[in-house]
Image 1 (cartoon, one colour):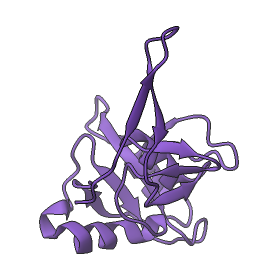
Image 2: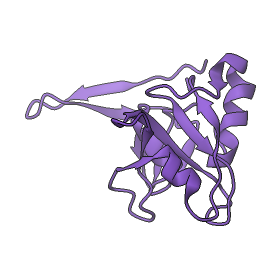
Image 3: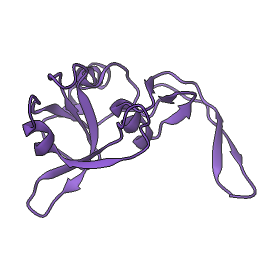
Length: 150
């Protein structure tokens, strides 16, 4: 596991810690789905990128294999769990794949995920059903789920 040095400064007006410096090992451009997942998993903004949070790189379609390589077989799987990262491979809409964070199930048992990829702004989270993404035109079912990212 990579060690990160974090320096925190507390603003007396807001009493909210602010990060001043942390090594930016893994990045995703703001507005991409990977940046949204990094942010959700504790990443931080650095210029036009979101850094760390998820401690491996690559396009969304590569995250499943990269997590498995870095953290082993137990880091990934085919069973959805709240908080897991859901990974889709390439499709005609996105050659880079897609990722999101599982947030639970609806009243019919369909898994929901959130994604923040309103490129180029990436400012809004959207909530979707995993099945809707997988069944929409020219899309594919998820490759699987990532349970360990740090």
